[in-house]
Amino acid sequence: KNVEQPVKSGASPDMFGMSYGGRQPHAIWYNSLALLRDLGKKDATRRRDVVAALTPVAQTARPAVRLAAGLALVDLGSDAGREALIRGFESESGPISSDPSDQMTFPGRYPYDESSITACAHALARLGDRRGLRHPNSDVRLAAAEALTGKSDPDVRKMLEDLAKELEPDVDKLMKKGELTAPRSPGDYTNRYPANWVRTQRLLALRGDDRAFRQLVEAFLVDAGTYPREEAPLLPTLRLASWSNGPSPAQAILGTNDSVDQVLGRLRRLFEQDERWNSLPLKMLRTSLEEPGLQETKKAPQIKATEAEIEKLLDDSDPNRRAEGLAAAGYYRVDSFYAKVLDKVQTGTTIERRAAIYSLGFYGREVPDEVLRTLMRAEDIDLRSGAVELATRKNAARFARETMDLVRSQLAHAKDTTDDGETQSRVAYLPRLVSRLARGPIPQPMLDGLEDPDPKVRRIVVQALELSGNPDAIPDLVRLSHDPDSAVREAAEKAIRFLGPEG
Image 1 (cartoon, helix red, strand yellow):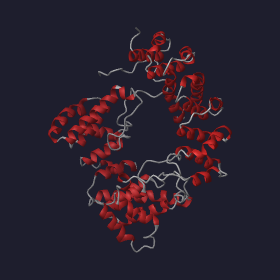
Image 2 (cartoon, helix red, strand yellow):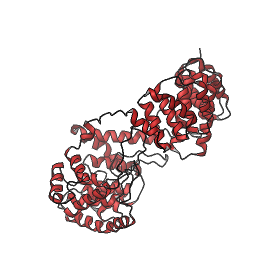
Image 3 (cartoon, helix red, strand yellow):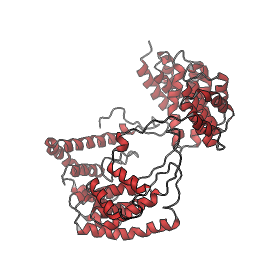
Image 4 (tube, one colour):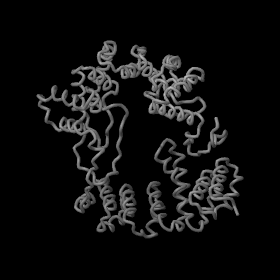
């Protein structure tokens, strides 16, 4: 209960909706529990003391606390929290680390901790309690089966075989609709096969079922054929990628035996006579199994784009390709393209202008002020944001008015797009951007922001002054320590403490 800077009632201290979750009492408690659990797991000499400390918590505390402590005890090999686990299995209470007084959760500390029933089924199975195998939800049954590792267990195998039959029609439907074979867009790495089907086949294959192993390999081959054959991009960070939870067929294949050598031997035994044995997908699969740490231990060679490759992109009819060429020109600092980049930042399409601003940041040259000011008046908020970021890297105060205009525009834009995570991240970055203005004498447009009618603007400027480290801001901050908005007052008091009291 002794928490530094407790969350206060009334106005949230975070005006952008991002709670200071790590300071919540229950967050600190759950983190402490996980650390204590890990201490007992790693140090056998302390395990008995840790179990003794957690046992009364798992038996007498309120339900959410009992449940978390009971799971920690299972990780320590103790069944002292069994009653709490049975209650958690019988009634869904949501994520394990949730707390009724706080909407935030802190997942990832226990297996399947996004659901109390699933987590408890897994934990109880680790204690030898098989009730999870009979649950109607397939997620729960699989969680229990994954904890029961005995390969000759007839109950588990029967459940998995029944579940495989139950899930097969879902895969058939997806195949008939063409959803498993449709070509992917570049950057699409989502898992198309149902996660529970993949998990079920892996557990069956782990128990010696060659048919299940074959089905995983067949699924891998189908999935491998959906990826595009394309040229490698010239830049490493221009493409967005999408992923999804759950195992892919390739990941599942790796977990079908106790060792990689056994997986390779099984693959060879079942597929070496298959005409697809030397196809590219199976060659890649074998290579990834033979050298599983290849991507981690060897860095990909840095291949610099040639001027001819960049020129080809710049002359392409597709504006997206031209944008890639503009970005590559700056990324590789090709001086011969600087004039074209500077021209496109003023005359290109929106995507070309954004890429050109990105490119100019790498060249490190002084961009004419009139060009920057023109960009800062653009209707496109991303273009304006990029221009201000570039313009304020040096002598930022000369663009103080434009920077403060951007702050107000970004806040207005964020108000209309509250579900846009990228927009909210840019708003959260504004104090760092505005802090550049106060590297020298604090410009008047920035100080005027302290009198803005919008408390969000006032708070951004207060945070920026704190980040700048400029003690000249203290007299102005003192006035805001009596601001009508509680969040602004707290930010001003914090900034004053950081910069030092006036005088």
